[in-house]
Image (cartoon, rainbow, N blue to C red; front, side, top):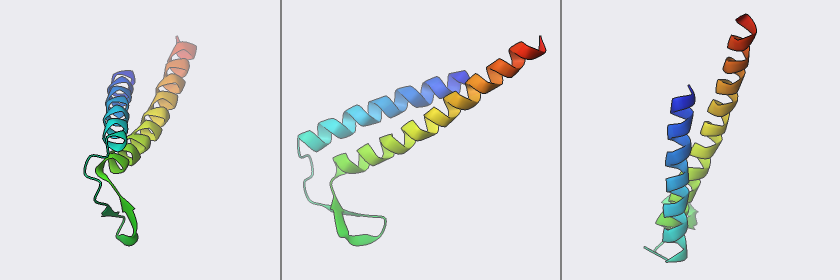
Length: 77
């Protein structure tokens, strides 16, 4: 579980870096539609930042689960 949590943490960090670079550089400034709402326009950088944020939440939950699993294994020994 820890290996998967490490992999997800690294990928989410890379996504945040790429999303921040795209957002600051105004790459593809034409707003797209997100979540089917035409009133909310976002660029590609913001979309990648949203994906990175969701992935950070997932990796945080995985870290919590991995640490709890590790504590229970130590108690049984």
